[in-house]
Length: 368
Image 1 (cartoon, rainbow, N blue to C red):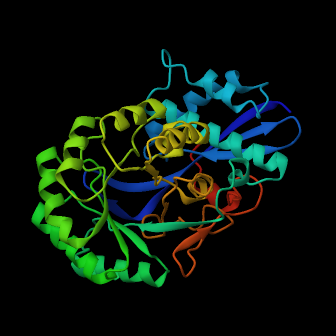
Image 2 (cartoon, rainbow, N blue to C red):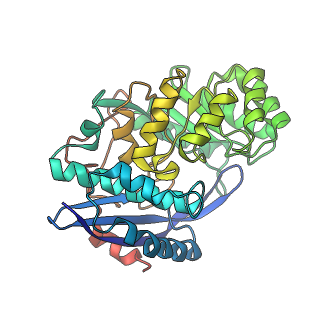
Image 3 (cartoon, rainbow, N blue to C red):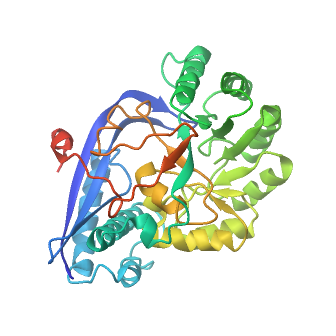
């Protein structure tokens, strides 16, 4: 089997309601689908970062033209050889959009291998467990959304079966965010895991201050409290609070996580296969974390990470997005993942990633 073509299909749409975290406003969402075709008629589909801007979409198209000649003619099952060929630090990779592009291509290879063998990616990776706990991500700042709106969102999450939820902080004064955390905790009750995510909005002293004020509300983890490259700052914060620190969604490759470990920066890694270099590199990071008794709770799409958390012993929980963050969230694929009454997701046993893009629906949003 040989790769004969790589096709990039880019889609972009308005989210419906603009959402804001501790530092950024997001008005659009979308998909960058990478379709890897073979001479045996088998196709694998992967995706990585969203085309937030038209400029980013153009850069991604340029990367396709650069990487395609390096992949055409290769056996897709030689995924490690392909990964090393693509990730050449002197020219591309290391961090940023090029490594994210490699991520999408690598994910497509794993989907392809699953389709070719009739096995799910979860099974190809070892199949550690078939059901995985999940948390609903949300709690964004939105125009006109006050404490009542936050409480209503949390109540709806519970009705959907959530046993864990995450909310944003860092986009309001500390005393206001502590009040938001209090309302969220009182709304979901004591038996529900509550995570907070600052998206790197704080300085170290600010993060220590709010962490200590949040400690009475039984926070499951404090995610991305400070700038992602401040490894020593993460370590100082971890020593200053009883709340576990989580980070890593903006970290790239095993080397970044090696440095986080050296700094005792976090108890939980939010490694994102759609960012750090794909499934191949995610598994390297997971093994590195396991060697240090650290847990993986990925940031990013549930359709990809459900397979990965289900395949590793140190997988903690999966992030789950609903339509509150993207009006078309449930329309992107023909298959839909739903929480069961225990707040778990069942890993699909269909070949590959087990999801099929709804190309007919997506076509109206295509930008290239």
